[in-house]
Image 1 (tube, rainbow, N blue to C red):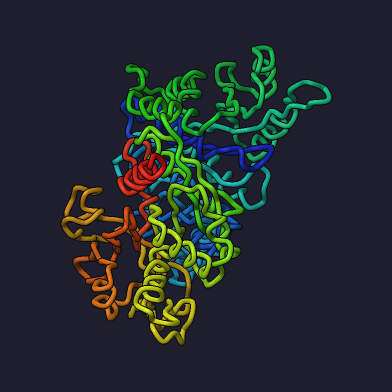
Image 2 (cartoon, one colour; image 1 turned 90 degrees about the vertical axis):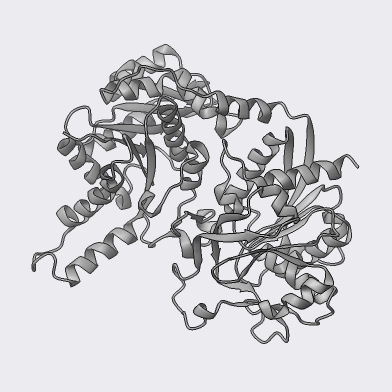
Length: 537
């Protein structure tokens, strides 16, 4: 008898229905009822991880404390649950196959023919159960990427089928997220796509236990009954998921629909106490009743796809709610920003954030944005590459170091104020070779960040190869750009500030990865506050 219960979330009809948000919302409700819950994502692509994927292709790459480069859905999991994830929370087909092939090369299969069944499916089941066997969780929710019927997802679906049989009754549950499209010409909702999706799932040997139906219009009792009858589920197991004004409404919507109750019933778990959502609803109240609006420019080169900066945008929601202001983010494509148009493009803003990124495209536009913010007293936050470009801008325009740059952009720069980390110089393999995961940082007293963090030593997550070049530190500090955060083990500079500026902070790490609903990141809270103060001048 398994002590950990397993919930599998599959998707049908179309992609992008929000499996991650439904999984995170259900997890939040179960957590609020006192259960220890975690969520993992199984991704059917053959990449080892999203670390080398273009953000236009896959959205942002999210980084965990232990240095795993993962799917952006893990960001949703952490933001909703306020619990860190790890390498075990994200599995890709590439990682599965690599592990199986490595085992075969080591002779672990004793010369047997290696096949999808049982070798690949056994590896998948093993990965699913790592979190459950740790003893840290009562319930593990596993989101299966892709859409039912995809060739890529078949080994995962087969693994779920086997696990349901192996775990026995009441120890696992399949939630199928599907779409009920509305045909405007006929003025009616259609159930047929969902029926076909459930049928496709059944052809793989899996009967959905709960249907969560994405819809733009209310589902009538009659329609729910029809879905229940033709999809072979109980009527109370047909859950409506109507479009929401914010993803943070979804846990309350799922509570109203009874998703947590039907889940606990089917898993034969106690439904004693009502969910404790006071803190969550307090956040929602502040979010929906702002007392002012601030306008912040997001300077980046992937701004056409919002998911490229998902964690940053969500951090502004958290930081805005904490300050009781609405943050209007204006995406600005750095590739087209220059000295001639920067004033016009940044006009009316109360602050700018220069986003992370890789490669030389758009960096000169970022440098122009930094210069404008520095010269005009505009609150500025630079993250990773954004911090590095702030250093480059200062070296060029204040120190007068012509051609100063990062060696990432110009290998032959006469003034490499940002340069490759020593241990990176002979690496050609791009996957997982950066400074990744949580690293410590000692904060200088009487700095902007010391007031923001209220701690002498912090831990933040990193994802980069290039670093602030310490050879230029004395000159930069004498000119007014102070290094106010230092890694105690390596001596690397993590934070720079300009004390004479109203609010100018650059950080080498990614604070957005640690911002959650219940623990908004202090750096974003402080930046939004500075932007608000700028707006009322």
